[in-house]
Length: 382
Image 1 (tube, rainbow, N blue to C red):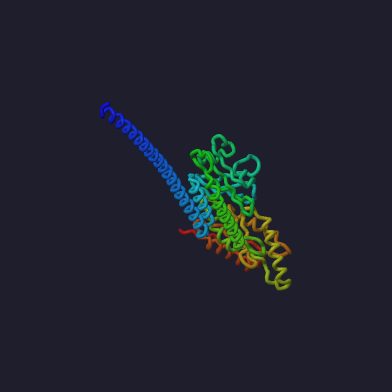
Image 2: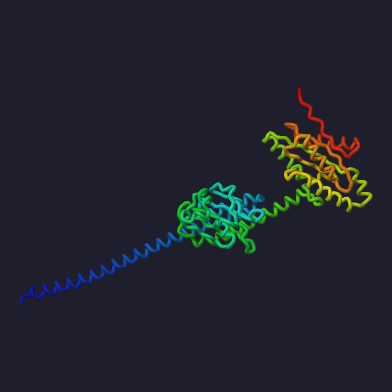
């Protein structure tokens, strides 16, 4: 056997072995490369998720901070409510948000603030025809509606005004009791509310409760500031705020308004003879007796001391005189009163109108008391 016959087969076997070994090494390298590539893709995906979550977290924190800053810095309850709605639609990624509050008599919900849609005038009764808002209040739990078209019978008007495909109705709680609803609405269909949304809406709903409480407190303080402590009638501040409004209303409606200034006769002597407590009782009885003789939209105010002011919208002078005469007859404890009445002249300033009524009152006092005298007409320019 020749040398070549011995060498070549051995060499071929070695080459095959080397090729097998190289193939195995290459296969291992390729496998590791594929595993590395897969790990890279997983890491890249996880990184994008983390970045997206961090970005969303920053948006959420920013929205909450902005809402809280607006609440802390704004004395205006309306602006605070709007800030809550802006925060809600930002964290929800929704175009529409609204804050619904219980009406004064508590029988339904009305729109206190809204962004992204015009919802003024809407009312959600708490009894009778059901609604998601009413359910959120009575159950004190959030309600998510994924398909407003399929479930739109309950809130058809809301869905129509907002063009909502999905909505979340989140109760606003105060000491465990629902006092309102914070609602967000999406125009695209949302399969389910994001888990991150619940705690954010909880925070915003708590801020909404603060805004509602502040508004109620300011309203109570406003009523106190405009109410006479003794008689319960509007005080002079309320009178001075309301008279320009009534004049503006008369101007817009091309109607008239009369003002009467009324004073109890010889009240100081009554006080001196019977004491101040008796005088206070007389003022309270007089206010109640006169108020019962007036229309619901007339305004009787305690102007100061024993003097009262009366605004009579839509009354001409003759009709106003008749109304004041009824008050004179109703004056309690055989007391009498004097009054001066002025009918608003077009273009006349409120202070000038009151001044003419006051002059007529002084004339009634000078001419013997216990009478009503109409004010002189405003001279017309030639």
